[in-house]
Amino acid sequence: MPKVAILVFEQVAMFELACATELFSLPRPEFENWYQTKFVSFERAPFATVGGLQLFIGADDSLAEFDTLIIPSWSTQEKRVKLNMAQSIADFAERGGRIISFCSGAFLLAQLGLLQGQPATTHWRYAEVFKRRFPNVDYLEDVLYTQSDNIFCSAGSASALDLGLEIIRQDFGYQVANQVARRLVISPQRQGGQAQYVDTPVQKHVGALSKTLDWAILNLDRTLNVDDLANQANMSRRTFDRHFKKSLATSPKAWLNQQRINLAKRLLETENLSIDQLAAKVGYDNGITLRFNFNKHVGISPSQYREQFTVCR
Image (cartoon, rainbow, N blue to C red; front, top):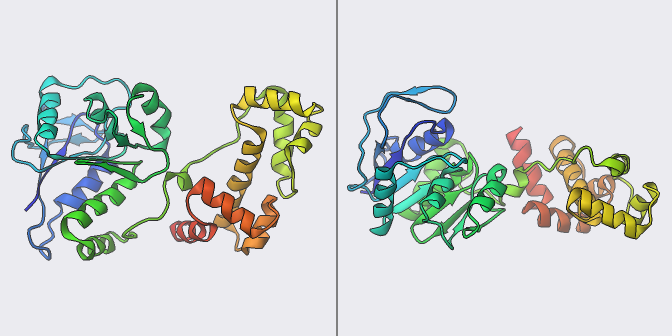
């Protein structure tokens, strides 16, 4: 039966730790050869978790007996890694052990050099920090999890459950993974990537453009184009494009399209509109154009988004 180690440490994130515990440490006598799971720590307990909860835990400090290591989280800052922990994890990876990081846990793997040239992901909030600190990692933006040989990374928070179910699926098959998902009262396999959860708010305080942007957002139900925005700002198209890109680091067309998608997401969560009614409310010519752009930006169809977020509400 697979032997799993869950890494615990000062300021470990409790939600991701709970996900690892629920998925891999909870006894499941209905399944044969289920995981044997222990906690591993290279720090002396007790210690505080995120939120201040104190952990009193009798944990092993060796990875020698395990097949799988789960890293629930890690600091997104340049936190030093204890030498004995770094060496133990490096040795574990060298002998082919499976390593699973949840959310910010990818920062530890990257610090240890285990993601060089490999695909990886983390919570969308930390994406820019991650890419800046680890430019040699192949960061993937809009995925729920990644796999490269024996190293897995999940995106933010609840994506830990998605990746955990995928691990169970690989180890025990679809039927067992589906039963575990049912006990968790979640979907066995979510569709789409992180984009459906990312907030893309309007940037504030962009100088002379701010009134034009506010006007555009209030008039998204009209089929506005970039020339309309330039006229509203009393600028030539060329000048407007230049100022816009300098202020917002994107093109006016891309920004306008993103605002339409933002509005479409809000309406899908709150109103029961047909696809053509929705398209008209956000300024697209028809439902086909809306579907195309929604899929492009969000990664799933409007109907899938509505189903998922009305269930969540």
